[in-house]
Amino acid sequence: MAEPATNRSSLVRMAVAGSVTTPSVRPGQYIPHPNGRAAVLPGMFGVTYNVRCGDRAFGWAGDHVEPGVSIDDDADGGRHHALHYLTCIGNDCVVTSGMAAGARGVVIGEHARILCQFDDETHRLIAPGDRIQVLTEGRGLAFADLPGIEMKKMSPRLFEAMGLRVEDGRLQVRVAMELPIRIMGSGAELNAEYVDQDLMSGDRPLMADLGIDRMRLGDLIAIRHADHHFGRSYREGAVSIALCIHGDSIMTGHGPGILTLITARQGEIDFTIDPAANLSDLLNLGAAQ
Image (cartoon, rainbow, N blue to C red):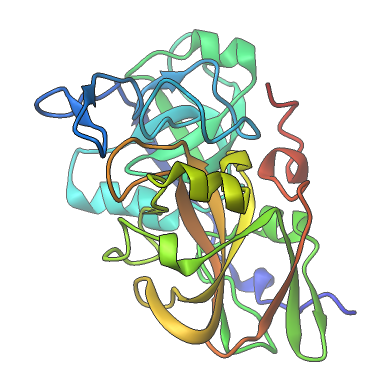
C-alpha cells in the first residue's frame, strides 16, 4: 500500500478568529422527548469543562453537548462564513485575549459553532467573549491521483494522523464504527462543508443492538451509500467518512452529530473497523474521562 499524493504544497494558510460563545437555551426552554415528555437541559455553545474529545457521545444529562470551547464571529455574514468554511479539523488555534492569552489548542469539530479543545487549565481560564484565532489550512486539499474522492474539513495534520493508504486504486481508511444510512437525520439539507448531520438515536434498543450507543466524541465513522459531495444524499455504492463532533439528543430526528471528512461516489473508499480510530488518539489530545 502507498501513501496517497496530494496538493498540500499548494494550500493557502490564513488566520481567522472568533469569540468564545455563551451557552444557549432553546426558545420555549423545553426540549421534547419522542414520547412527549419535556426537559430543560444544557448543551450547545460556551465552555464545557467536563466533556472532551474521546469521551462518550451518549449518556450525558444534556442535549447536543459540545466538547471543549465553542467560538463564532457574528459580526457579519462574511466573517462568520470565513471562520466556518476555512477552518478544518486539526487546525491549530490560539487564545489572543483574556486570562488564557497565548494558550494553544486544536480544532476538534464544527457544529453551529467551531469547537476547539485546550488543556484543562486553559479551559478553566477561558471566559465567554475571549478571542481565539485559528490558523487555517486544508481548504482545497485534494488527492492527486484519486479524482473521484473529495476531502472536506480535512487539515494536513489530520490527513497525516489518519495514516491513509491506497491499494488497487482505492483509499483505505480506519474507522471506529459504521453507521447505517437509514438512521441519518437532521442536516441532510445542509452542504457538507458547513455544519454537521445528526443520526436519529430515538430507537434506543436499535442503538444498543448496533453498538452505536458506544460511540465516542471524536470517533471516525463510515456510512455506505452516502454521497456528501453536494449536500448529503443517498447514492448506491457511495461511501463517506465522517467525525462524531457532538453528543446525543432527546429530540426526534436528532442524535450525535457527524461532520464529513471524505466522500466518494463510486466506491473508491474501503474501510476497516478499529475502535481506536478517534481524534483524541490520532492528535494526542489527552486521555478521555
